[in-house]
Image (cartoon, rainbow, N blue to C red; front, side, top):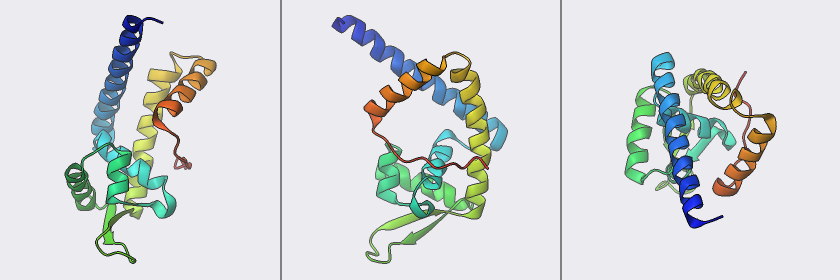
Amino acid sequence: MKDRDRDLVWVDLQKAAAFLDSELSMRLTERVGMSSSEFQALWYLANSIDRSLTMSEAAARLSMSPSGMTRLADRLVRRGWVARRADAANRRIAIIALTDDGVAATRQGYHVAREARRELVDARLTEEEVSTLGEIAGKLLGRIDITDVSS
């Protein structure tokens, strides 16, 4: 494959990611009153051990700066979706943990995200294409363990 063709794939990948994020953000805002960043943070917390992460772990997973993560965490705390505490072993490390209300908000967001996925991805790609896309995304991003929050 020529560089020009790879450039086009790269641009298309960026456009697809931007489109999907924009669609999800619009649907989450309209239907459950949360941003896609808030949902992604809740999702990562819901799928983490003890439903908690250090602030630096959360920032890394969301590809955010520490200050951006602090602002996002402040919003999540104000909404009652997460609680902030210091690490017992090292009080300089801040931890955010999902609250019961945060679990409920994550489930609401998940239902919106699942519906968007079905309409925007599942309806356009075959099972084999989705599987291949998952393998490719896994290679690009690395894997994280996902637990089921749908119930």
